[in-house]
Length: 276
Image (cartoon, rainbow, N blue to C red; front, top):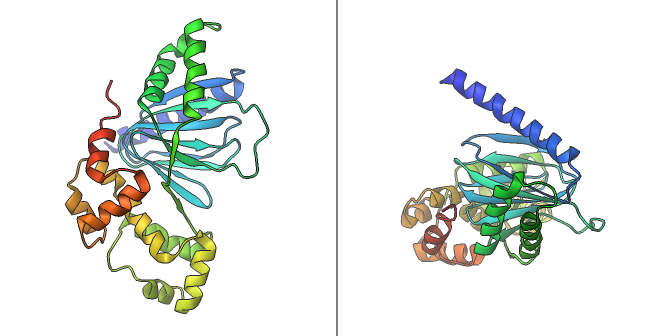
């Protein structure tokens, strides 16, 4: 089994290198790509000369940059700007599709990744674009599908699934530990003590590093960390309590604020997004 895993990782690494070469060598304005990496796979740090829309059909993907983490659940996608260094962690068996678009104008300094909710039309167009990927250059249907796909994804609604991360090493380590094992006992004073800071200094520094208060970050991180369990179909009540919420209602309120729907509705509508 260990030997098989090593061979699988080598194969996946080779696939990533081939994909990067394919993109760099192609003159096409729009490219589409489909992949199904397994749980635990990590795509190393890299960047593209095209804008990427990474769409998750099933499973959960974590995209990392130096300052933020984006959790991409089923039925959502992440816009990744040209030239942005990023890495990808696969948090469950995943099916994902990507669209790579050559920008028509110079990138703005304000361009930043953003998570969007994928419409049924965008999903269908992306599947068809992947199917037509081997069509000859100039194929009329392929051109129309890609044109409509680009138009549709430009209108997708943004969702606040990006979690800010501090750049300060010790503070970032505490945040990573919390995401790995969220707990209702995580207290500001405890974190401040671990960093040998006063409560006031920690509060000020945390907001400076992340742009939000410790309480807000912890609430968002709790929802953030539960998405893989929801995607697997685990009971909402268990997830809410394990994440430290006093009630399912409180968890549902925060979840609705972030994803625009209740956890149960999300599970029904989004975890079947990969239906063919």
